[in-house]
Image 1 (tube, one colour):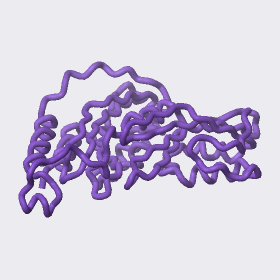
Image 2 (spheres, one colour):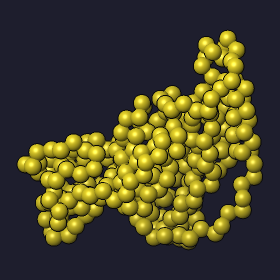
Image 3 (cartoon, rainbow, N blue to C red):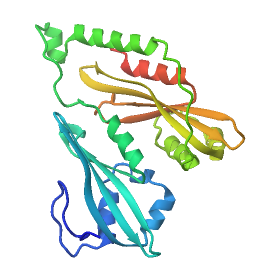
Image 4 (cartoon, helix red, strand yellow):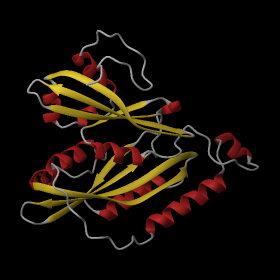
Length: 273
């Protein structure tokens, strides 16, 4: 195992006396989504005796920089546990953001959701502007065209879906975490959460994904279907909308029980005011 105290990646060097416990406190403390880790994983980390961290992958293109780190832990019972840390510069003003995942596939999915361009970076050049446009700092014609383009894309009939291939992978816990991170007031309630406790396999499909200029800012819109297979053989889907059409440009997650509700939510967010 590598020296657990050796500095890695873009992080500042730290004292060689740092313990695994201190390392974990730093790692969990800086992660935006540490609350989203499975409870069983957090409990197992409490018995970590040693650790090793290494750069797993890195991608740099203007303006997006992202890296994935692998943190391996030796536990008291002799087993090992791995956490995957995604670091990217999509924070306000290009500041670094940290996310933690217990599965490499989840880290890859999160990395794929990062926009190539994001709020805080200038978009295409603009032509002559009216006094109102200069005051607002936007090109009204371009904003209207972008809004109409997005609305047309949202209203277009989706392609015929492929039959899902379900993967048994702690699907009930995946459903719990999906519902927990939803921020919309009309998200599915306790009845749906109770039903999905019987999920034993699931499949995630990206149904829609585009970037547009909304209210003078770059905003990304992505729609995912989370299809669950239940113990009684029935299927149930949740529809996740992830977007950056927020005042500060941060990522926001909304979850709906019906696809048309999810598309209406994207249309509402994308409407040019």
